[in-house]
Length: 535
Ligand SMILES: NC(=O)C1=CN([C@@H]2O[C@H](COP(=O)(O)OP(=O)(O)OC[C@H]3O[C@@H](n4cnc5c(N)ncnc54)[C@H](OP(=O)(O)O)[C@@H]3O)[C@@H](O)[C@H]2O)[C@@H](O)CC1
Ligand SMILES: [K+]
Image 1 (spheres, protein in one colour):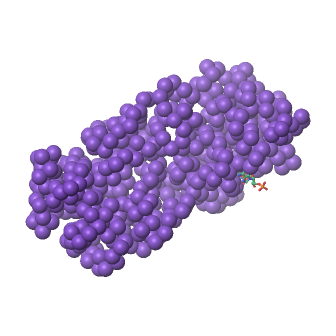
Image 2 (cartoon, helix red, strand yellow):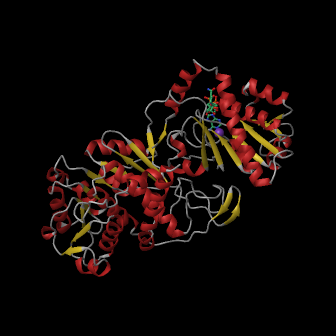
Image 3 (tube, helix red, strand yellow):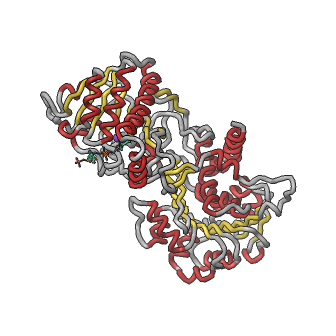
């Protein structure tokens, strides 16, 4: 599992590191890593390095210092470097002196001869003719969106961008973007990811995140957040062993859909079928429709006839009336692990007495989207979705899988996993029903609930991407293509060649296509695990 650390954790670790390694040396390590990625980007995007031009956007703090030192290293590779200083009086002195010694230029952002937007002619020229831009405006101390001069400079940037530590204008802790913010092709960070690289709009604004080793290992505490990679998911996805039969792998019960709306039942049952080689039982009014789509499902019309299961997936399409309540009550009383989604979340939010039916020893997973989350929590989550999910998980003693473009998975003990898929292909009707079925299958297979949520979300997101045609190598690599691609933030990269690589074509999908891609996604993560084992 990869870790994500808060700015406070990073700063505390840095202070401990500085007792052993002088601060300027650490900064030069960081800056060198930035320059390495800038060189790579220049080579990829312009076909060369020496003779190209890099423009540094330099703010008041150490983030600007990193950029200046990175410019110094770029000079050694024959790159022309201009630093545009946003706060000339506060510019990192040693970094600026080093850049000047190396033959780099520095100009003030607002002079001389500022235009009507307050940008000096030399600064405007440096930004507009850059082959690459290094964003050293602000880092861990950033608050709010870019300030006016920085925003005006950013508006003029067309070259590929390497962000130092994080894209300026993005909130370091929540990833929220509240005003103008840099959209990077690559973000080079130090020692470990920050929350803004994986949460909310920040995950998109960061582009590809490269973690450089500056010696922080050994000084960092337990991470605040965790990320899974494909190999881990593949290694732990339950598959039949030599001794297994259909029962030993765990039987999953699906209680979903209605006679009028059987789709949720078909999708959730189908996902459970695709996710496990064991047995799937369905109980509910859509039994005939489920059977006709999935003959391998043992389907019955009533929850009381369902038979024995090792876990339940309950909720999608059961309604919020008396019959839905009865189904949920039965499932909660079963003493089995339960994944409660959709209508069952609304039922639980509306009728607190339902909680009394729950066996306190049986794990409960809740999978709300924003609206359901607000019902459960008694208010909107706000921008700090991690804290909000943690609070609800602790309050209800349940694992909370808070859906969104970044899915946040909080355990009652405070552990948090995030899935920063950086694409929105699963945002389609019925997609949540598929996730519920996957989760039910993993719970029935005995996977620990918090991890089951992580594995199911990973595979679900990957299946959506594969179905859409966006494709992602299951080695953990991100989608190909630039974050500045024409599709814009929050959606999968658009098609055709562009900065940062060649984009793969994607097209909108429905939940049935997502479901059909689940076996490919599972195969893909298992292949990643296989490759990792022999690396
Ligand atoms: N310590 C080290 O050696 C190492 C540190 N490292 C590097 O240091 C970075 C942290 O540096 P830092 O703490 O100096 O602050 P930093 O993020 O540069 O901000 C500077 C100032 O910007 C301002 N500002 C705030 N918001 C703003 C906005 N929206 N738009 C514009 N300006 C804004 C605000 O100043 P104000 O104007 O409010 O006085 C703030 O004080 C870290 O990210 C990493 O890159 C690495 O080199 C590893 C070794
Ligand atoms: K930055």
